[in-house]
Image (cartoon, rainbow, N blue to C red; front, side, top):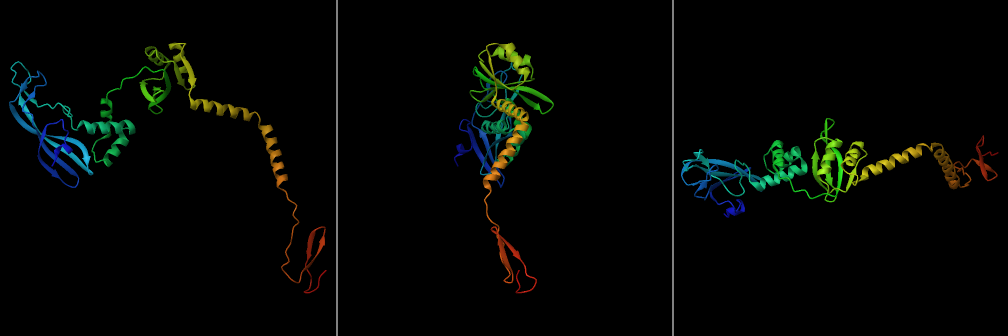
Length: 303
């Protein structure tokens, strides 16, 4: 079997055995490296102390949980001046110290956590045959490197909830790239002012109707153009129309009555009523296009 289909090429491992059942696939592997370096003094050694089995999670295969049972060596540090006497062999690629998962699995879980959040990503990971808790996903998110922020020119500022109804902060979004570039711990004018002073490239700020943000932007620079975001523009327009129409209730009522009367007059059609004759013993007389049916008192007699 070609083991490179399951084990990263950068890791020089030898497959010892393969165990599998209805839910798991376990690869027993051992490293091909002869020596390793001490993490403290970086002295290279080959003297083996002992071995142990380290379990490492990997991406699922065909709906089964995949694990690598890595036979890891413990070695003696042969540097007499080093305080570390025994250490575990290190691997240069794809496998972190004390890591329980390969980097490719961590990257997938981190992406799920960033898109869905801890709890939802935890539930989805079950469907992906990966056992992991929501807290672990959050820790992976925290460990994600922060991307470099380009100098923003047009930003959006709004409040957001650390915990709804209890603690709020300020979110800052680059409106040219639609990416969140910073989260401020509070929603105060001073905090926003200090942030804008550190980012002097900002030219336009889109904000809500909060006087706090307006004050913070004005204190930072008079050259920054403040605009209202689209949602609040529509909200202001809606409220303006409501206030105007509330002052015109009488006129609107009169117009409504006039239009309804005009509509009724246009739909009136003069059609003479017709009463059908169901009984042969009944006759009728006509008066001005209206047929009056007079029933007889006795059969065969008409009036």
